[in-house]
Length: 141
Image 1 (cartoon, rainbow, N blue to C red):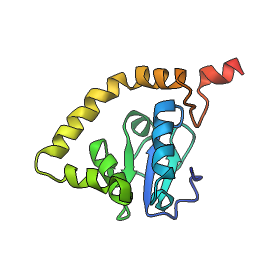
Image 2: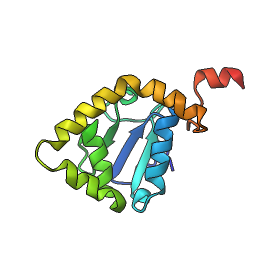
Image 3: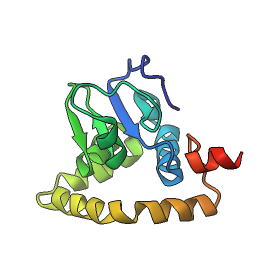
């Protein structure tokens, strides 16, 4: 599912927070879908080469995707970039292209960001596991 920072031969790179059980569950879902093998998933909670235009702090704060042309998109645009690559999700990318919808998706994403930690904790309580153990989890082990 994930690739090392030296194995980025795929043309779309998805940067995700592997210390977040919610994020990890979502990435596992995308990776398991048809077309998921064409995406490179990089866990930004571990040291990784991100490129000159993405800092580790920014990568941990928002969802980012590097498109095949090298451009970096984040937030709702990042999700749309993933959906475009997955046949079962292309309907969502088409919806996002309707005038006015992408800004609404972005507003929804920005509303989601502050509650992500609580949702991640709830997801963890329901059994989802992070790709990378948090410092708190490592101390318990």
